Length: 186
Image 1 (spheres, one colour):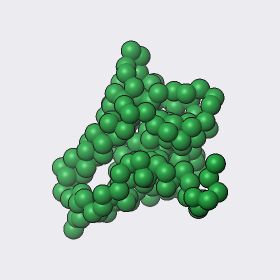
Image 2: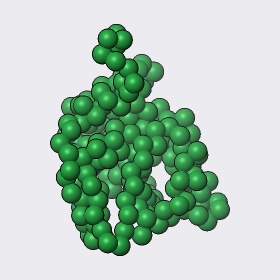
Image 3: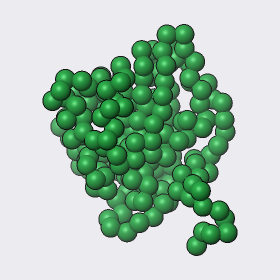
Image 4: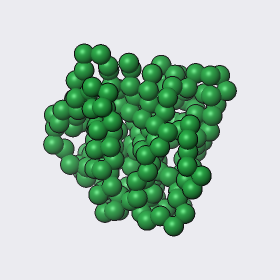
């Protein structure tokens, strides 16, 4: 089985970039071992519908993204099946251009969507200002989200072996300033 871990998010809007950051974190810190299955990790950013050709190539997809839940706190995590989105969850981040929900609905129209599981977290929404920083609540939640995914993979017979120890803060800095030297940062 081909499995995709797909991080979604806009790194320009703080917590809303957590899916993209976690895709890089997982890719840098884990090796997936299985005789039967393969695991790929993709930072989907805000590409949404441009991800359709990638998504349909997989047998199972785990999407890491932000969700909105009434009366929830920043950092609250929800794991659910795309086919059974709980009614109290609104899955549309304010900073994404075309939402992942609509992208999956487009794939459904053609009948090509693989089983899709969502690991969603409630972000601190900053509005229209930009920042690369994420809140401490989101940092704490992010490691729980990684554990949810690695535990789900383990149940499928896939070992998620810790192969690196790059902290999330370093991943965030590397993701945001890729290709920018220390001398040119403001």
